[in-house]
Amino acid sequence: MSIIVSLGTDCLRWKLSLVEIVALAIALGIDCMVVSFSQGLVLNSNRLKNSFVLAVTMGFCQGIMPVFAYFGTEMISKYIAPYSKWLVFAIFMALGVKFIYEAFQQKEENVCCIDLRCLMAMGIATSIDAFASGITLKLTQTPLMLSALIIGLMSFWMSAKGFWLAVFFYKLPSKFLEIFGGLILIVMAIRACV
Image (cartoon, rainbow, N blue to C red; front, side, top):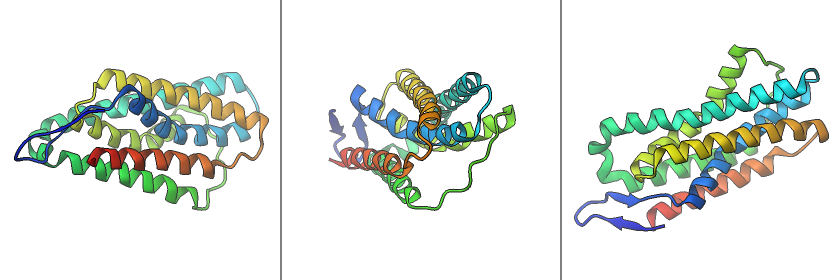
């Protein structure tokens, strides 16, 4: 990873490396994995179809949200560019702390829902963090299409894996996965400032 700071400004000139994009995709995919795991526990019929539809929805939403944020950020980038290093730090740090905080919160009971409205609601709810990551992709001038593709594919894969893990393990502690994802994001926040 290379960081170049413009003289006289605090403008961040850092592109995420491929390894960092994959790490980001894994951290974002953990939410998909946890949601799919909870659905895999309660969906007992048409498992193959349901796991596929759920994984496609999660992958699509996680992959498209950074694109929306990227182009939305483009419209205001000239105003926020001088603060980009600190915005990237704040976004990754907030997401990391949020992941760790949520790992210790009481989870709601599993809701069995696989119709289109529920799928889209789950997909959008889990991809809010991916939207925030799209802002950082723009601020760090990281290639959008490669990043969105990796995030979407990783989310698809982790969602499918989470669903099928639920079939084999009734009680997998998601707390450790959420903490791991949070730590990845916190490390990326710190890397943005060094």
